Image (cartoon, rainbow, N blue to C red; front, side):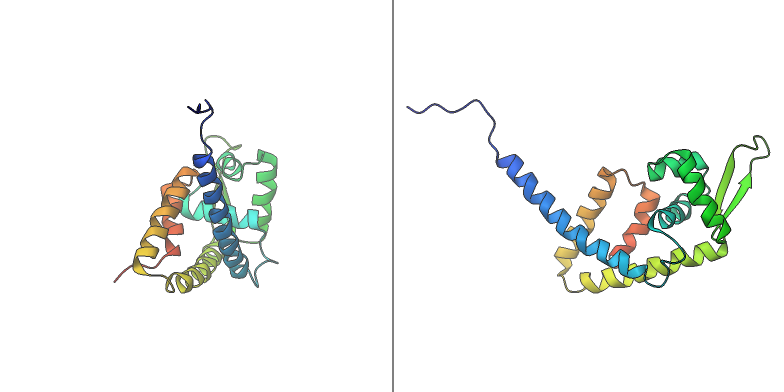
Length: 170
């Protein structure tokens, strides 16, 4: 009689490794689409600056602490990033009447237009790819991306913006 080792099988780990590889492959495609959507605006904003604009767009007015947490940087880095956006006319800064150290950040009309323009570019490219898939595949992608976004900590409001990645069924 053969004895079975006490170590767990690698089948779960092997499956996870394969899943990670597939997500990495898909992320390369998505990053390429995001990079293409930035064509022509890379002199206006960096990727971290765009992330700030998208956070303010989806979550509403934010303070510097929330921006720093969202970017996973220290407040001084977030402050410099926001200051550049303010100087570019894409972000507004409003001091609190109660505590002048606390500021509220909102999009300017130009910032809103930029976010809308870039989102529309991404939407069109992602929709083009999704149209090559069957309805069942599109549904699976939508469910998987939603679950992935939730597991990664993306808030529902931001998930609403990311939902633009797949077309609505009519």
